[in-house]
Image 1 (cartoon, rainbow, N blue to C red):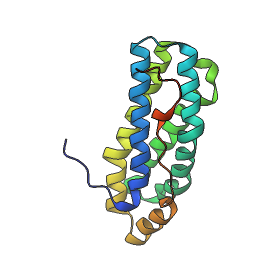
Image 2: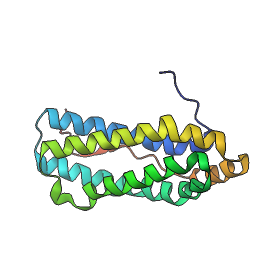
Image 3: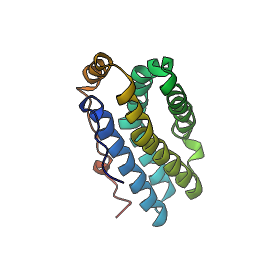
Length: 157
């Protein structure tokens, strides 16, 4: 699949998505290596608190208004629903106890990110006005791109 030309205004979110995919890769590696489940759970909590929680809030605040666009309604509703589902993994860490649950989390988060990048963002770029796109750019311009590879326990190695 050729690279997608992302509007500069959405690039901060795409960079955060890249880190989310990296989280998925590291979690997958940890499961394959049968890393300690408590370490995997703590890694998930770290990623949630340092990255994903804010990212979800940002998308919900700034993208949910586009639900009024007929072309975007279904996609926006899907990401909001996905956020609710994914959030449960992180807000109820007691469920993060089995490799199968870590696999499930990794799979759903990866699919969610790929949907946003491959389907929703291109639709947003082609359906909202240049003024609205510019306003998104202003909202996202100071966003930080955390990197979960700085996690102190390198369970994936």
